[in-house]
Length: 163
Image (cartoon, rainbow, N blue to C red; front, side, top):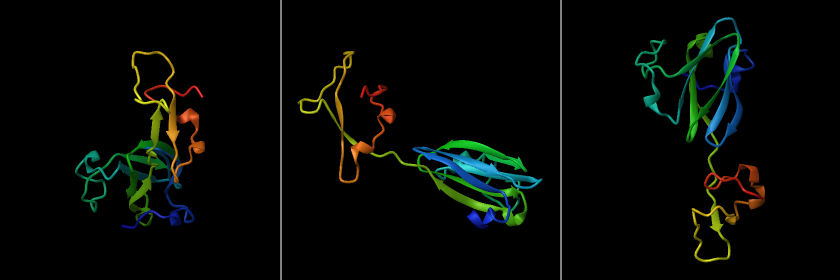
């Protein structure tokens, strides 16, 4: 069984488009280009416990049946969450030449960062009962420029930054 490649698109075959990739998620578009069913199975992080049945609709597939989306000359989108990656295969429906084996789509990984609570003071303690403002600095590195951080995406203990 071949892996999905962009070769499917010029042939007008069923295929998968990546619409959006974020930290821990990916949005995929499942595309059927002709008037018969194309069915796409999916799983996350190679987790075989996501199998929904022991028997696949394609008798040549022996590792079971996974959640799937079927389209008939149409498209649908699905956002899937994963720690590292999502895999898609098309092993039933469509024509045999269109089918492809598990193909990996990576999600973005969070960037580990260091912070300094109450910069310049020691100890760096927080009174959790206080309703005040706690200064927190994000520390940069040679590989991480803090000016690239969008403040609207920062959350600290369920609180958004004031500035």
